[in-house]
Length: 82
Image 1 (spheres, rainbow, N blue to C red):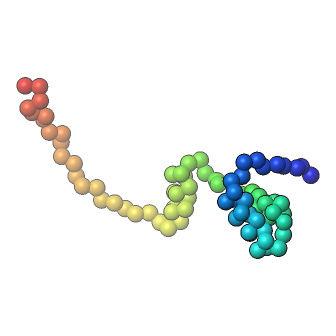
Image 2 (cartoon, rainbow, N blue to C red; image 1 turned 120 degrees about the vertical axis):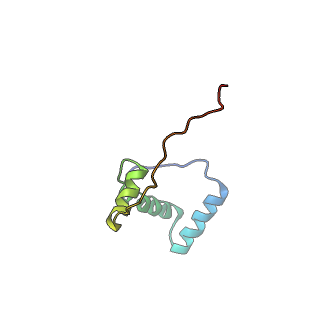
Image 3 (tube, rainbow, N blue to C red; image 1 turned 90 degrees about the vertical axis):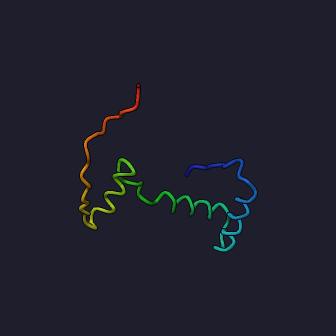
């Protein structure tokens, strides 16, 4: 088993950890171990980008057909450079 020392934990965070450990009836060290275990037990986010993640989540819901308005030809920028 590896040992770890975490320095520079602010007092408020330490107090919250102490309180949560007491609520669960265990030591701060056990509580911290459980928090780390829970945080690292989930699979990492899959996908190459935010767009891919959104697309993967929305795609099963179906697509939407949008009608785009017709575009006019580009107008002559008269009045510039005169």
